[in-house]
Length: 443
Image 1 (cartoon, one colour):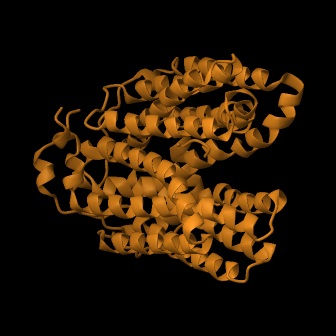
Image 2 (tube, rainbow, N blue to C red; image 1 turned 60 degrees about the horizontal axis):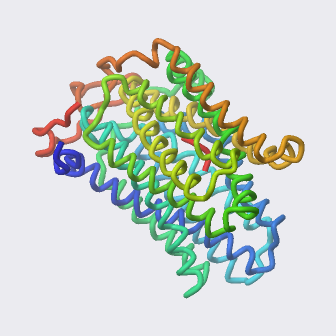
Image 3 (cartoon, rainbow, N blue to C red; image 1 turned 90 degrees about the horizontal axis):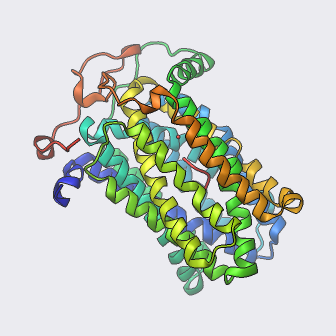
């Protein structure tokens, strides 16, 4: 398929606007994480203080995901994302202010970063629910592929830019730039169409949470793939992130070599996302699950003592597989889960995927003292191959994706949804005349 047809989704005005704003905020966030790390170290904070601050961001993100899902479905994805961006913008400005003192107190840093993580928990479930509102149903896969590409690209470019800017100016300036990136994202979100809020009395919070859970667990493929990624983060990715640098320091050339491995992982994800443009397999869940087998390769290469070129090559393949599975799992969820509960379903998937990741990170070191680094990484590689084989036995994974009435507002007549909320009706663009041929890992 010609490249211009694969990029036809970018002709849709609302998606194009959102893509540019989202890319800007992603780049700012990737820069801010590195800048904050340097800021803490340069102001006299050691590893303990840095660990507290990093944990303060991760814990609210994981613990508040389900709340974010309910809020996203209740307020609408656009409104939830606007709120999240406003909070994130203010937290970054707050960090700039406290860093001006030269020696910020730990409780200030922890409090602000915790708000940052909580806002991300509000934004994440709503993101997957927003996409079906701003693209045609047959362009969902392309939209998700492009979002995978920009996530990978900014994860590579952000740290590089942050390092350069921090050395030229200072960390506070980089954090201020991140605040500006969230402000740009807010402007873009304000330009997108919105759905009318419900005029009916809302159900209780726990009632809405239970409704989301019922939708999530009613789809075997959805909860099985969530468990699959959860255990991948526990047994494979967490140990890889912890023990990989140890092996790199011992025999692969140190930090520079490890940076190359991770850069190639990101480059593979970019390539995988680009390959997915214009392509939606007849059995997307099957293809997505097979692609996750590539996640076993980097751990296997390290466990068997392979040289740096081998490790880099396996990281490239694993990154490509990550983009393929992320694109297809997201598309399947958006097409099969009703719009009114999509944010909550995304929240359950994200929560499940991340839940055991911190344990994998924390336990990898101590367990490696008993089993050795090769033993831990080798177990992870074998586990991943076995898990993929088990998941592929499920009929719902091997089946094709049926046409659903829940593919978003573009293919339903505008009218009342549950609770009196009107369906979003986005104006079509010229791209509609040229149809396309036909839950996240721990960072």
